[in-house]
Length: 450
Length: 167
Image (cartoon, rainbow over all chains, first blue to last red):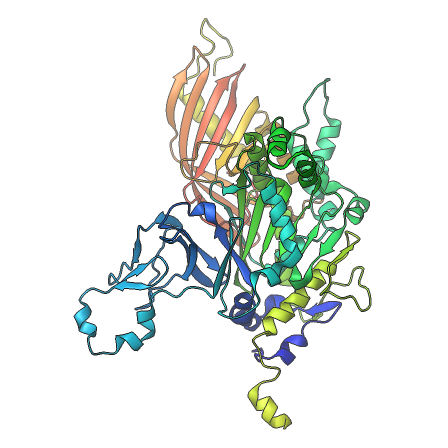
């Protein structure tokens, strides 16, 4: 069905303890998300270390919208829609490159400054007296509504008007701060290309799974449980080092109690994280030299405080997750109601020993790759759910674990680590940002009512 | 292949190397993973780079960089009762071009074979194809063993769904 673009229609799909399956399967809902939700929220674009020099650019998508992130001549990072204002041709196709001082469209050679302003048109006299200055095309490449650089992480809001960056993220930025504070030089750098993993499922399934602490010991028994079994059965002469696989994968088999006690924190606007008190990253071995480098930057007390945080997954609603303790960011790019591209990026802690980067890269390939034994079972669950939701047997998806009557999702809270409050928090934010730019009722309905 | 060793470490021939690569692919295609594990040196590594011409498997993301513990885990997982993404199981087929033997050094017991092949994997209604170049660095350890298998995927920069078996 085609959903009316109204608050009333959207509100009917989100209840406190359950959400309608059409949030996951309806093409109409996906189109409305692209128009409203993704436009009103702050989305992650890229990291400024991907465009270190003036004229460096990186192309990506904000939901269904192709954009270019580019370092302008004033050293600021700009985000422009990737289309020529003339005929629509994408200006840049390479995933990364350097364009010099201006972009030049490969079709008719219209050129633009790296902030998008129209610079020149060949044979311009052909437009004399035609009123080109009044045309949309004369405004050049369109920038997104707003851009914010948060310690190197570039976010954009496509809507020209809306909630500010600070108001949107609030206290949740402590997770991003912690990840950057782990670098002795207080700076991160992207390393290499991201893993690109195509999921035939709705983007929300992936985002919900980031704080789903009741699935690892079930869905991942085949990898984590088998790893533990092999290790326990092996003959281990004195001094046999624990294989890296054990350090990374085995904690997935921790019992329910471990996940209950780790805690979940939620912030307003759909953000939240697992691992308040400890996490599956808590027991990683120390890397020689790292603590000293961090103390030189922060002093001992703060250095210890920075490393004492072991936040597991922090969801920045709507579409990214970061892992501070291992410097990783996953970007869930919604390409359709049943299609999500997952990009998994890794970062170097500038000034830290290379062994940390080796662990970061190892985690990425073991857990997030299309070849990952852990990823295989996750994707299997998402795709089975996407297919299962097509049935007429039931209309709702349940999210009521540890629900409390009258819970206020506009307040920060720390709760039992197996609560589904963070999922409810995401749907609360979904409704808020989806309907922020919708009328309560359609014009015709309003007239009928009056 | 000869069972006896002369003054050189081994007397491996070109045909021995080509047969080895074919036999390895056939074990994977027939799902004889326990046999396949016996082909590896104790410190053998399986590398599938993420980027074209990638040089560093450690400090950049790879698709696979797996030691014998990880490969054994992979094999045991494929046989497991609760391996949900393998219910039903995938099947694969390696269609090999004639391998190029780039190095035969029987004095040092070192060999390199480069093989272009098409890799096909299927499960339920889905089937995908990868064009790959497999580079086998082999060593003589009372038989040929894999020291490093590097698998370069032609479209390594594309987005993939699950790749569940071993190209």
